[in-house]
Amino acid sequence: IGAKTVSYSGPANAPGGATPTYTTSVTFASGQATGLATTLVDAQTTTITPTISGGPTGVPSSSLIVGAGTATQLLFTQTPSTSGTAGTAWTQQPKVTVEDANSNIVTAATAVTLAINTGSGTLTCTTNPVTSSSGVATFAGCSLNTAGSYTLKATATGISNSTTNPPITISVG
Image 1 (cartoon, rainbow, N blue to C red):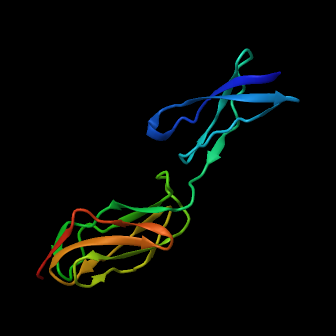
Image 2: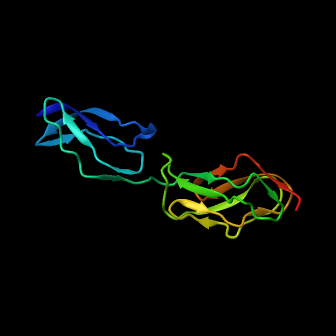
Image 3: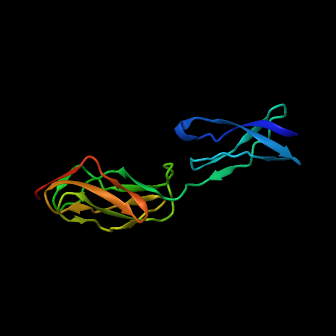
């Protein structure tokens, strides 16, 4: 067939929620196309359907499973209560999600540590560090022992930190 333009659509969940259509030039030799490439960044199950210029619409591919990439960032998906009493566990406890560079949740178990970023005092949690489950580290029983204004940070080896915002205001107990 030689050189042809191939358009293909999919995946359904592209960045920004759009359904993209890709167009690229490929060369066919012995019934095989070379030069067709794309990058899928959202973790999902999808299909891709090709259309060849001057030819028939292709058959949709089998389901393609795109998994999350390597963990690169942490995100507070539930911030702790913005106020509390020294020595008393917060009403709302922090949850930290482990993500790849494209904000896909990384489900591999990751040890996440919660620490004081700004402020002076001692942070206590039932367990710290917490190992993530299905990509989320859920902290429990966390409190600060000294009155003041604090921000917290979540850390994990080799992964960008995340900090809380707004600050937590702790009053005297």
